[in-house]
Amino acid sequence: MATGRALISVYDKEGIEEFAKALADLGFEIVSTGGTAALLRKAGVEVRDVSEVTGFPEVLDGRVKTLHPRIHAGILAKPTREHMEALESLNVTAIDIVAVNLYPFERTVERGAGMAEVCENIDIGGPSMARAAAKNFERVAVVVNPRRYPEIISELRESGEVSRSTRAALAAEAFHHTAAYDAAIATYFAEQIESRDGVSDASPSCGATRAKSPGDHWIVGGSRVQSLRYGENPHQVAAFYKFSGAAPRGLAAAKQLGGKELSFNNLADATGAIGVVSEFDETACVIVKHANPCGVGIGETALEAYKAALSSDPVSAFGGIVAFNRTVGIDEAKLMSEIFLEVIVAPRFSPEAVDILRGKKNLRLIELAESDLKPYTGWDIRPVLGGFLVQNSDSAKAVPLELSVVTKRAPEEDELAQLIRAWKVVTHVRSNSIVLWNGSGTVGVGAGQMNRVGAAEIAIRQAGQKAVGSVMASDGFFPFGDTVELAAKAGVRAVIQPGGSLRDRESIEAADAGGVAMVFTGVRHFRH
Image (tube, rainbow, N blue to C red; front, side, top):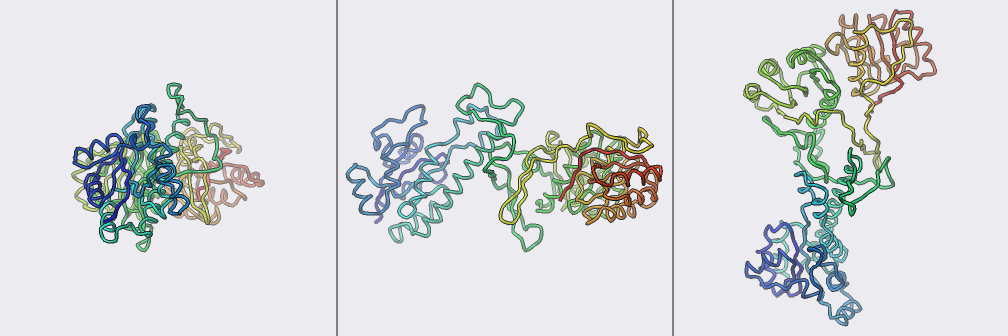
């Protein structure tokens, strides 16, 4: 029969009674704290209080319970003669199993609790014990996951001990558990100090200083929302995570009203579609295909906006992702049901629209809170070989504060309005990118080309006759006058671009020669 001492202190009580009873039947002495001890006694398990072991009471409303040398020496002692003799001289009993899980910090944040309550749900003793036990996995089994209890009891019954390989796996799980917990806390405080109100004076014990740029260390924590069938391609494994330590937002907080589970590509493309449609105050619709907007439209109604977006490139819209910034009603639902679409995102769907669209059994309907339909202002994190890059989001996408008219002809009022709309779209298209806008929507999109002339040629070819009278937006400056010459020949009336090339004069002269108005924004928007 196995013997030893087990320390049990858990917030999540799932399976703990059965686990403790099985350990007691195997000859383990059970040491526990507060509510866990009371629950186990009620279940008929003989328990020693931690305070009896330490000779020190639980104090400060339970903030200090297990932070004591008699506990941590019992956990950290290595299985050597010297360490065992040291424990004996101190009258400390070795602890062989530590079952611990942590205060519900994330759940407290997610339900919108105030900072004082959130701080009280930052576990100190639990992570300390878990890390100590994981460090000493050569002797101690640490379990932070209740689903592991049966496996541990099975090994103890079969061999009288938890195997080294299992102890190592449990240690890795514990370090992941505490790392994710700390990442959630770090995320929460980073959000607090960058919020409008910052850290309030009412919580001085949780104070922090404002972070103005990426620091020496970058912490990202995530909690799995769902496993995905596969990644970008069927041979890749994937999952969807939400940021730990922050209230669920965006697609992590969205409500799916119908259709299959969202795929990796659905989620990625839906994010892109939301990013574009969030730029518009007018009623707008965007259709995204393979990470690029293939059609963007505005209108008095959602139906008009959808028709404008669809007419931009009806071929590419097949199998696309559609996003609205207004309620989807019966009329647009009927029209959308006529073609194959993967996902429709909107702040609301009318009941009649839901009934119609659910007729397409695989079509995913995603209801996203209006508060999430706004330009993203967080940090952009991208993996690279051997690490990752961090930058603040490209938040200078709104109407530029200053537009410089650089041609002889200034854009007319309607041209200027369309230039600004085209500019909002081009910031979301993969570089090099060109967008043509005419009337109520895009008419041509050239994305991801190795040179800007190639992007313009694609956009103009797609627009056809709709290029005549359109306006053009470019995400980067023109290094030569050739793109503007091509635009003028196609009938483009006005151009918006960052400017800043050493050869700006060439593109300005080309615009003047073609009677094209051109404005500089002074800001580029590469998207790689």
